Image 1 (cartoon, helix red, strand yellow):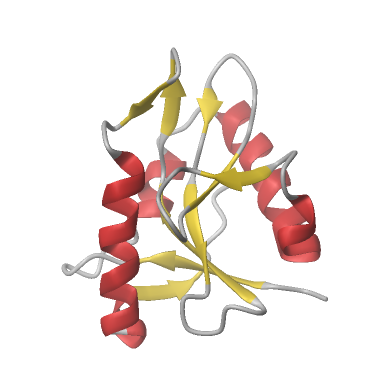
Image 2 (cartoon, one colour):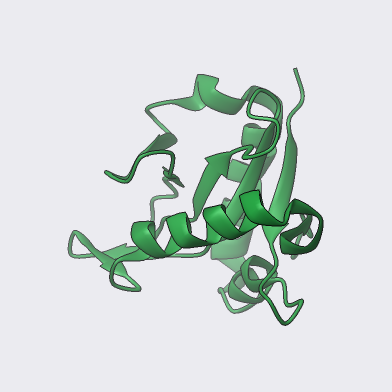
Length: 129
């Protein structure tokens, strides 16, 4: 079953996930896009090899391994939890620590703003090549 992916949009209307992705090196963007393609096709079936928890309830991370450990943070739904995901923010793990610090908690705050105002706090995922 195909899944729909959304990007979080901040209060200024900026797609933060798109901006984060655009700042990655081309090879990292390609790896991320490959993972997002799999997420759209397989959803939670990717757990735990590619999709796993973060220690914050309802916040998951995509595991894109390489010389840079990309860990984009997302949630099921949060509006329709059966067939959609919202990419909340870009993050990395460096030496087992989150960059930015407390990234899962920050992502949870963004998730709550999506729940409060889904029409203005997210857009269809915008792929960056």
